[in-house]
Length: 498
Image (cartoon, helix red, strand yellow):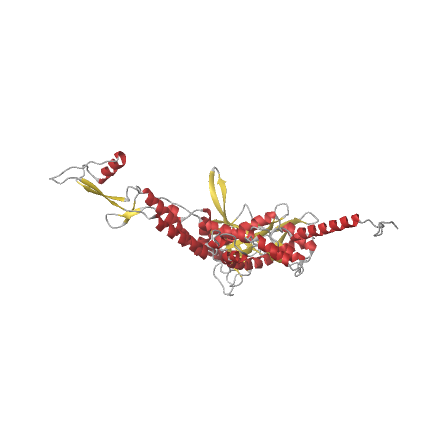
């Protein structure tokens, strides 16, 4: 089975974006240029970048300024007030929680073909699982992530993830299930003489290969240093270099949900509210001199600035008697109620967990010795989100396995195109071990031992555990047979020998 197309030309025609058959006065390259400009300035790409920034801790609170009402009634910035910028990154915690819940444990690929199963283990190794976990993080932050199967410089089959905000996909259908072609935009650092510059690269991925350009002044220029090429180059029997291409675009989308909506859109306002509450509370705590409103009578000084300086430096101020009126300094106390901040903060955090569909490990249902029903109740929201995410990922793995099967076929390792594979996501869920072990023991004789072993909380690999059980049984049988050697005869009950 050969699914790679041999092309004689390294550069092929870029597919047209307009699919209604209408004629266009613009060239394909001009259409691409317009689409790139639209994407770079689109709200969708902005949300992708925003999700990653929030995850890394770059929140809008860091750019906040302290303002007061000025003489003209308008807000103006002041620099002599505390301006704390506190970040409690509950969003990053939510993302990590979801990623580790669904993707922390190794995937299981179930197939009845044992040789195929072993080959899949070699392809989806620990290096892939690490990339896949990072891919899940990207899909939550941006709504969608991209995996690129490719051959490296020495011909090894590998996987690479692209940053979501770098990829502009063009779909064949409105449901975004089949990719027509895609554009990737990224930057590289280089030197022009002794000056360091940033060059923006553009790559167009089609079934004709990778077409490379440089982006300058909103225009596509051919990349002279890295020309367009096929996805794979090999030498034939005569030493000639031959280019090969996939018959599908080698970019696989992994969606957080079918609408490709990033998680940050659900919880941005709540995360900002948490940061604001904490920052305002610390500001108020530091404004101790302003928590007390000072009422001055006959102050012995020139202006309020001098008064504030004397009060801060000496802890005292001078007052005087004018026209029989004695000077005085009175205070009006303004109390900051910390309980109000605490209540609002708890409301925001709870709302963020609920809207983000996570779980609270400090939930009251987890107090004492919770049963499995309480645990499942706590995980209900994150399970809801994980179910939808898993559905999208299962469809993506069908696409991914197509490339894996083509690779195995073209490298002579076997034709597995028609093999059925079930991808199992082993969720990292908290369980009541005692209850699970009791249920497993009661199921002996009712269901298969393989199912029981698979559900046991101490099992890490079903096949290895079953092999250990079988080995122990065989060892016990051997000990029993060695205790009663063949040919041995026993005495009579009365103690006499035969």
